[in-house]
Length: 94
Image 1 (cartoon, one colour):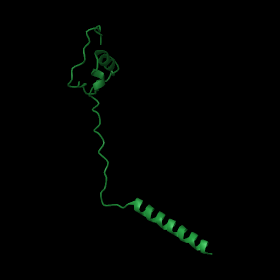
Image 2: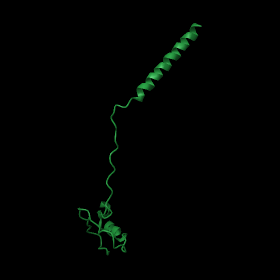
Image 3: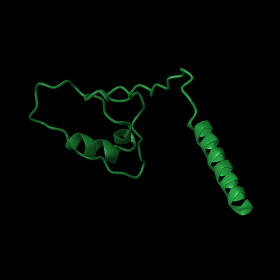
Image 4: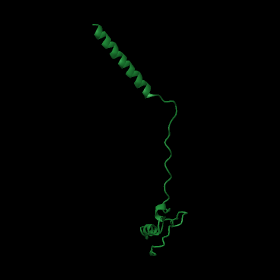
């Protein structure tokens, strides 16, 4: 009988300890609302990506892939960096 009472006390102590642990881990809201950062601004459709000016070949490939029959969109704006030039590449026609 004494063992059964001891087992019941141990079970109750373990259950109480688990309850306290779970209550402590749950935390509470201290009023600090974490707001996600705002999304980045959309890329302007008229901006040439920096990867297109990494080399003259990349720039020619990018420009060749653009629509040529669209006369209503804005002109493309190049980044403020210079296009990388190579001494070994041949000039490429647009």
